[in-house]
Structure formats: structure tokens, C-alpha cells
Length: 167
Image (cartoon, rainbow, N blue to C red):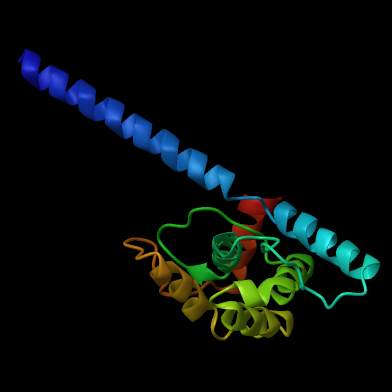
């Protein structure tokens, strides 16, 4: 009997640690777009002060490619049907433009820079016909096992998502 209680206690403790770790990861990677705007403003300021070609930095990208992928992926959550959504970045014109600024300035650092650019340009033009594919493409790069998008949210469902996550 004591062994069963110990096993249950250890299992609960492990699950609590996993939940806390998951919560930390989600909150750390859910900026709501603030990071996008901060980095985009930094790039725009640098470009306006410099005569160098945009994005011509010597040593590193303004935002790591993984962060671009996380933001792009979390923006899709506003528009896709997905059983398990971790994190959300509001898909506003400002966030799309900001992420596009980041991608254009750092495209030569990113393995998938052309993909990000094409995706963001289509969103900028209110073309979300490939939103499910965009979600699942980024999801698959990390061998996702849960949370594959299966379709698009209706306008009402999207509004509910926006109200729940951003208002």
C-alpha cells in the first residue's frame, strides 16, 4: 500500500513539474507581438540612420529564426482549428508588417526566409488560403505530435479566440 502511495505521489509531482515547465515555455514564447514590434523598430531605426544596405549586419540576426517561427506559428492560432494551441500572437497589420520587416532584414540568415516572406506577404494582402498549411509546416519542423491544424476557424470562432486571448 505504501508503495502505491509513493508511486502516486511521485507521479503527481512529476506531472506538476511538467505542467509548470510547459506553462513557463508558453508564457516565455507568448509575447503578444511586443517583441516583434521592438525588433522591427530597432531595424527601422538602424536603417534610417545607416547608408548600408538593409539587413547588412556582420555577425548575427536581429531575431533568431526559431523565434520568427514561433511568432509566425502563434499568429496562425487565431485562424486555425487545432485541438491544442500553445501561445498566441495577435495577427494584426502591425505584427505582420513587423515580422516582415524582421524577415526582410535578416533573410540571409534564415534557412526558410523565402517561405516566411511569401507567407507574410500573402497575409498582408488578406490572403489566408494557406493558413492551415503554414501552421502545419512550422509545426512539422519540430516534429509536432499534437496540435496539428485541421481547418480554418469561422469568423465567429476567430472573434471568440481574439476576445479570449487579446482583449
